[in-house]
Length: 202
Image (cartoon, rainbow, N blue to C red):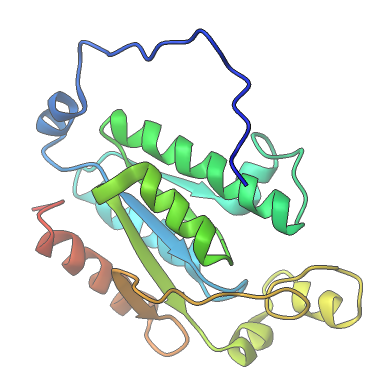
């Protein structure tokens, strides 16, 4: 279903300072690193570890974390399929704005539906890099850092991804990182190597 557009009589204002200008000043490209995976897969931990490594290299970065965003921008959204879709749409638009500012946006969201991730990709175009934090459900459930799986199994959390709601694995992610087997340091190196290979960082 086509999204209803309620804003009318608006025109995009083009800035004098361009994204290219900002990237030249930063000495690195802007990009959207979209970390996706089950709860407990380590995507947030990996996103922040990658950010730390990039920051140490002098890169301008920011992590958009699922829980943090739901404390503010998306606090009016729940976890129904419709709300999940809107949650990801908003983050896709915010990530693009960060890119326009020359910043590398790292997003850590379960983002369980392929179509939603594909739409986020469409928003950012070639800047979008899908990083699949691949981790078996039993390992995620064993970790259960927030105690959410236990609550979901007890029926206390409805529509919980991996238990009572689906997770659609990426089919063509730019990077698949096995966070269930590899160490955090190794996972970070894999991401940095990919970014260097793409010419996003030097």
